[in-house]
Image (cartoon, rainbow, N blue to C red; front, side, top):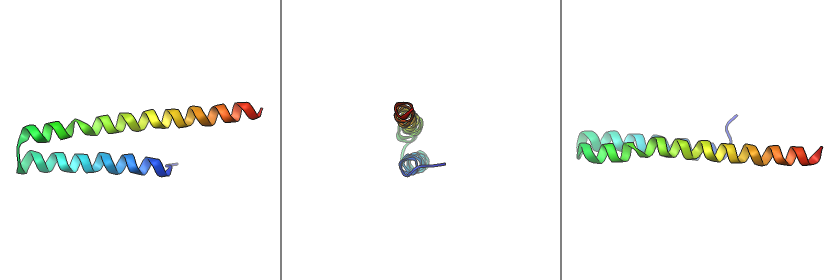
Length: 65
């Protein structure tokens, strides 16, 4: 179900979440909020890549027929 590229996005989003929580509690809440905004951005980028890969695969299948 997941491709190799999916794991990179999930790891990046999880690392961003952990960094955000760490910054929130250990350094400064504003830094934690800023890094926390990266999580949805990474996940939206992941969706965009998945849609592009799906469109590419669909185009290849349609050309064969």
